[in-house]
Length: 219
Ligand SMILES: Cc1cc2nc3c(=O)[nH]c(=O)nc-3n(C[C@H](O)[C@H](O)[C@H](O)COP(=O)(O)O)c2cc1C
Image 1 (cartoon, rainbow, N blue to C red):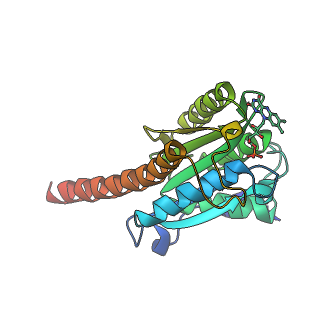
Image 2 (cartoon, rainbow, N blue to C red):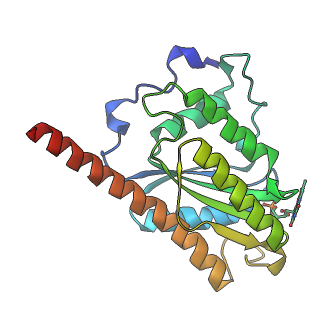
């Protein structure tokens, strides 16, 4: 067990501070079901981010089965500590949730609740972090409402939802039987774009930070 108060996440070691090496993208999502469609979509978006030059880390499916976020205790399980450290190190995120009863799954919401532990970090919550959101449900209504709810939560955490979010209707069977790839052009386009956009935004943010530093040096 780790105590958040012991400086688990902040300050970041110099080698993982923004601006060094390839852009770091953390991909979180899937359901408790191994090989879930929300995890497949996430993996395809992650591959797109990698093609755009990012270093990608995935934390998926049952790895995200964390205890309910506890406001009354500073103690975190090793799995929760790993997730929080990965979030701190990421310059961009991709989140993919199944639609449960019209919104994100409880597991995904619980993961986002853990971001509360980053409230006093040097980078508060997801401040300035591009977040690509993907919602997969068994119909259009729930996929659209789930995407909306993901974006609302990300926005509340000061993240920057990407202009394109992906809505996927699993009843259209957009993925191959083995769950490794996509057989629907429009779904492929959406998840590829989400993956590319988070990298593009993280790179823009890096160059903006460098420009701001130059200008203040010149002052
Ligand atoms: C508890 C629960 C609630 C669900 N609620 C909805 C819903 O409201 N609307 C819908 O279209 N699909 C709903 N689904 C179906 C999932 O969204 C669907 O299985 C989708 O493929 C994502 O699941 P997966 O990532 O595990 O494959 C629900 C599934 C479960 C287990």
